[in-house]
Length: 415
Image (tube, rainbow, N blue to C red; front, top):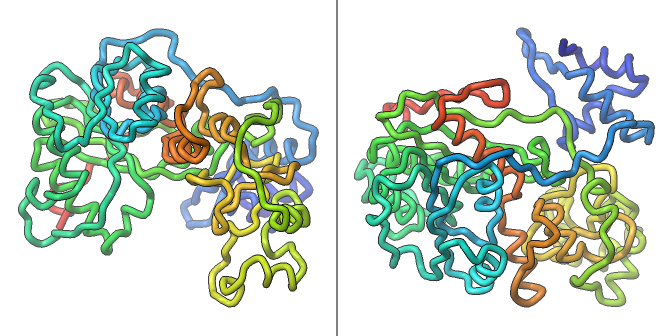
């Protein structure tokens, strides 16, 4: 039985303050629900588990693992904007077979071919690729399309509204292939872009192609990923399929950075300059620029010191006992620092890969900066796995406790 208690009740049972519970929730380490009166309530078991981990009294084993389904299924996919293979590997681990992957970055293509020589990887701009050959032969089209700014809301031109964008190429692949399911992936900010008009155009385009659509923001730290990374996932299910649209349910635990990289020897990566290392050595684990002396803050931050905003990514040292912050394409960028918890250096390339749940044998091709960029742009492998399981559940008629049904967006709500 799951015991859901108020913040005060949970704090009293664990002997911690309500501020501590609020801080854990704000950090994304525990989840809150709302009761009938709209008050926050918490899963006592989930909060107790975190409290034990923080106190160092947890008896739980390391939960970091690369998830794999016991067997493959007869489901095939085409992957667009494949990058270095985060989503593709996650889908493969769920049991999906890839018949084609499209990627233009040559280092990322070399990474894919080096690790999966049997994959059909096309190195080209997606707008030059023809997809009709896969019509009726592919179940899933998946793509983490880069989102150029556009808004044509109000013109109601459907598919033509998106011309000149990479989403248009994603939609074109769907129109030419007619898969049973299309999966789109993007940043959470897409929901608010141009006051929601951009996502509306995308939804209406998919609907005009004959698909029922739902979307949801998935928080990676609750899907077996040691990283706080939010991704917007769009599911489009072909109209002739009667299945509900299913999304994976969040787990009630997180995986710490210690679990992910605590046993990993130091490997190749960026290094700090002498002065930056002297400054970063003064930042405690889990701390950031506000933990520095005032004069050092001003020296390090320059003009940013006098600007508004929390700037919480600056001079940021990660914590062993929490998931990592979202990985960027460069662990030593001033605005989004990703310093090792106990060593004064940026996270290494292999640590980046572990946090994105790539297996240690997955080798990345290119310069150090290229490898950081490939990994930083990837969808975490285990998140891709959970997304794949949800797609398989829709296609095979499964609907059990690992999934939740999300209502489709009515056509009339788009504009």
